[in-house]
Amino acid sequence: MATLVTFHAHPDDECITCGGVMRAAADAGHRVVLVIATGGEHGEIVQDVLDPGETLAHRRHLETLASARILGAARTEFLGYVDSGMVGTETNTGEGAFAAADVEEAAGRLAAILREEDADVLTHYDDHGGYGHPDHVQVHHVGQRAAELAGTPRVYQATTNRDEMRRLMAMARQMGMGDGEGPSELDMETMGTPESQLTTRVDVTPWLAAKRDAMRAHASQIAPDPFFLALPDEAFAAAFGTEWFLRAGEPAGGPFETGLFGS
Image 1 (tube, rainbow, N blue to C red):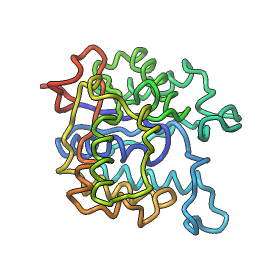
Image 2 (cartoon, rainbow, N blue to C red; image 1 turned 60 degrees about the vertical axis):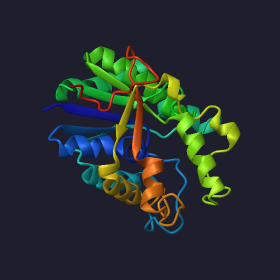
Image 3 (cartoon, rainbow, N blue to C red; image 1 turned 90 degrees about the vertical axis):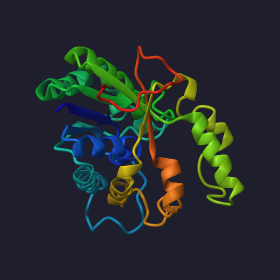
Image 4 (cartoon, rainbow, N blue to C red; image 1 turned 45 degrees about the horizontal axis):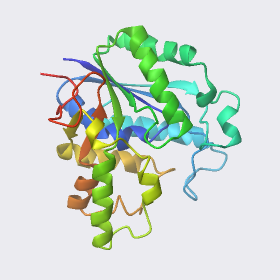
């Protein structure tokens, strides 16, 4: 059996982009390790979720552990950096901010985990972090360097299929679903990665129940009634039933790899 280490910027990122491959790997007997760079201190807070005196970082830590259990992670680690906030905010350069961290130092922390686990596979993000968030971009740089330091043999950049997302949004609008929600056409020009650059398409529909439950575990960030969690099963599967990756050095644009562990 192999070991998958999946590296993410904030609590809740893991279930959205890699929840299916995590649960699938665990069910196949592989060891799954979740690493989160920050505490998510600057995330938006769902109203009335926090207990009196409770910090958002504390709640998000607990939510991540709950999500990790649902997704089958055998180990969950936090690198200890501070959430940098959205692009262009003063928190990008705040004390301890992950976006401002030294890449070599941060990569050393992650590489130590990769070595301890003798990791076979690492996932991180594409070169623009999926949608430009400074912490997500830093996950790309740190993940790439950590894999080099540790000699991790298989490295995948988790992303979304920009073209597929555009097709799904157009279909949803035609059906009158999610009107006014989701990314704008302008956002779509930079979100995710074009299909022609992708190498790996993993069907995670058998694990969608776990993926949706993991999303619900992040109650401080995901309200109980957002339109995507309330989607009928068929629509939820269309939106979240495929997880996309880019593996450097592999042929892009199809035929796609269908898993992260090879043959």
